[in-house]
Length: 63
Length: 496
Image (tube, rainbow over all chains, first blue to last red):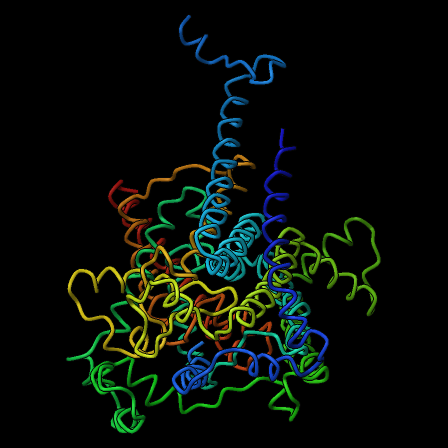
């Protein structure tokens, strides 16, 4: 009766797998292998400006 | 005759005749698959339209997993504390603590690698006070912020009222100024004014604005790793500081206290009746372990939640790197949705599981559309924005969470529309309002201010939890008093 619950899990896994595959290469480039230095690598890669820097600082306090 | 024909549906596969119960179950499964198909179409369609929408889809699919886990594990902080204080049953609380611990185990390597999207929150007594408000509210409402979402997915309309109440209260509370400024201490006012925030925010008009800029932001944001002089992004900091000192040790002590007060006596009585030896340290450890594994369902849900939440952070961080931005506001701007961005061009984009801010945002967006200025405050105007709920990443997560819970509830035949009574609706509104205030004071709910923070070694997490426990205790005592008073009145009216 509940056997097609696996359809739900399979579809969910397929979408998550695709998304992870999409995000994995840039992640590997910036830090997955750089144990302990991922945050620095991310900082160097993403677009940043003064307003975004200020947001980052405040965001740390807001969340 | 017609009724008999209607009650007997023919199986689509032609394998036989279904009873009405089987037909109803089949209908629910079709609804569940329909929901799944809807999310799949949204994801594929939006991605085909623009590659950037995959960022929102990530929130959607992880939201769906959160919903499935919450429904499966009956993950409810309100039930946990109510059961503990009202009937002295610790099963749900133990399950939640174990789930938090397992989330911490999964988060530690992500933090150590440096790809976590989590940021520590300011630590001070405000977290305890916020927790008290939240704890009272969740007991009165009959559900916490996260469980109200999954219960809505089960068709519980009281839970939907709780969500509406949390959403509206937060939006209004974040924007309230005028008369409320009279309750702002002078020191907060002066400190907020000196922040140099943009004029459009009008920081000196608004209680929450001055609370944030004049008080909360002056408090240190600490992790256990930081307190011990370690870097968060080091193996020692993540595993020893945040995980061992920040989660494993306090959780073990908490569970030991719960064991001694609420579990030990009953366990020993049952074991002695069964002729088991419960003497000595071994007996105590066996008893402790029996308590740990008493709520496997919640613990399993917690483990999957933990893995999902950690992967969520990882994937979001990867996409931020891929697309070259730090906040989804940039993404929305690139795809042409610039309405409702904050003055800095940002929107709420936590990068992990969060519940309450997106609920406030859709109310903020609605009120703005109705002519109110909802962006002259820090919460919406400076940090989180009020984007259209249809393209708000965190809103995709909450909608999908409700959908995920509905899917599992439909499959397990636990979906049922439950209409509120006037009395339960009243408690839902009051409890939701208290949770909304608590969430804004504590910068998060039972998920954002407790579950995620504790699991990531944030020192404010346990403080919020402490306040939440105290508030829940008060809520339980209040309800006991209310119920006894009501029963006494009813008995008196019957002449008993």
